[in-house]
Image (cartoon, rainbow, N blue to C red; front, side, top):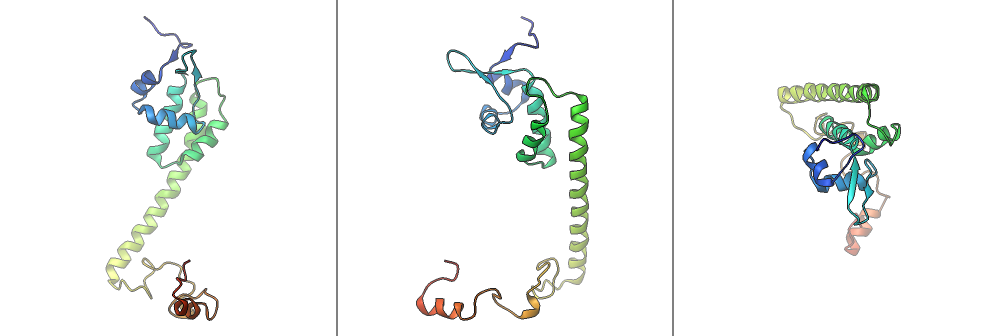
Length: 163
């Protein structure tokens, strides 16, 4: 039997077609990323365009895009149709910029790592890789933000400072 674009899919059909577990499909629905209708027997039925939305979710996960950002993207899309090419162009442009920023960040980390391996210090006092942006180092060792006398009072009473 030939399927029509208006046919609804069961959760098993969506899972089979998308390659995503049924538990993930339910989770995406709970998060508001996709939606379904219910039959009189309370079974979920999904419109076919949910397959494209799940495809976008899977792509986003590969790109390291959090589901909260996917939800923001989906808010801009009409609920009752499949995302089209122009939608994908807009989405992928934003995600491309995100990937470029991540690539630059990784390159900087790589440069720091190469420098660290080269110097071999691994000193917590001076190493920028192990102790980046240590603004309080100039004030001396130990916890610098505790109130004066707080550390001594806590150790005398047996309480932990972290409590």
